[in-house]
Amino acid sequence: MPDTALPYDFSRPPNLSPAELSTLAGAHEDFIRTFSITLSSRARTSFAYELVEISQHTWASYQATLPEPLVLAVVEVRPLGHMLLLEVDPMTATSLVDRLAGGDGSEASTRRLTEMERHSFTTVLGWALQSLQTSLAPLFDAVLAADDSLPAGGDSTAHLELALTSLEHSSELLRFVSPSEVVTAVTYASQTQGARPVKGAFSIIYPETLIGAALAASSPQSENSQTTLSQVQQRKVERSLQAAHVDVAVTLRPQMVPATLLAALHPGDVLELSHRFDRPLLGTVGNVPVFEGFLGRRGRRRALQVSALRAPDEHDTNGDVPPGSDIGTAP
Image (cartoon, rainbow, N blue to C red; front, side, top):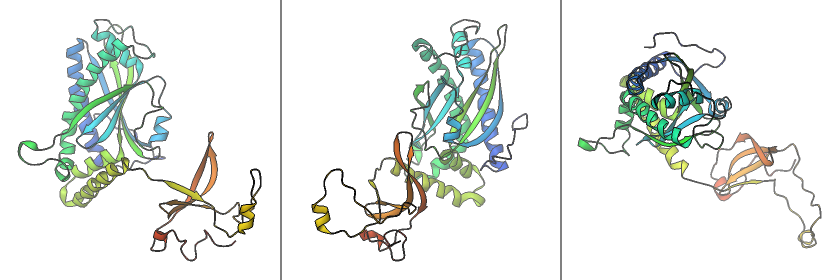
């Protein structure tokens, strides 16, 4: 349990229950306690860390708050195939690197890390991930046990492993999760002790599909067994979908025109259509209607704002427009 109360934003209520928040806070209090001891002994100075907030956002809204530059560690959660992020402000990162090199932390700066500093900070991240892996293992044991696509039994039992895959200075081109997906951010305040104390912060960011499954699986089995299994199955489907690509077509309503008109067309001619401007376009995948929407623009690209989803039926499988549909009927 955290030593202090965590802030609650009533305008942005989390999807986590009080019990789940308590479980998550307990695991991350354990992590920061272990990591602080390791870091203090290796850097020969005292570090103070405090868990200050557990919050949920869409990835797009959270990404918009990230400073530039930053220190962003991209971490693979093995063998589940998910990713998590460790976001560290440059002041904290450069201060740690300076102290590891024997300095007093006075070289702390908001600049990007140099290549040599990146190498040193990767060592710090290794200590952090080892502590975090140990603290999160109890949360993920049930998820790993319930996932029949993973090895199980005897010495082949799957274990949680956190592996650093890259260290970034910007989140702009980072492919983490979709912009609308919910992420959970666990935020810490930090301060190095001594003659030149440096205050900073860092956060651990989880996709909802990862942390939600872990919290559901760690709850009492009698209450959450069905939720746990559905989370695991959902994760399997998402893994398969990430590797799949489909062709999407967006079309106007069909209409009949004389063949002689088509034969007489030349570049620059205007072909009048009966599709009204205020009627939606139809989006299809493999000739199957999937959604409706209206044409627009995002930046320099054309875009489509989805206004409704379509439920395919037997008529859709042949590319036919279902009877009574607004799409394809005369205005």
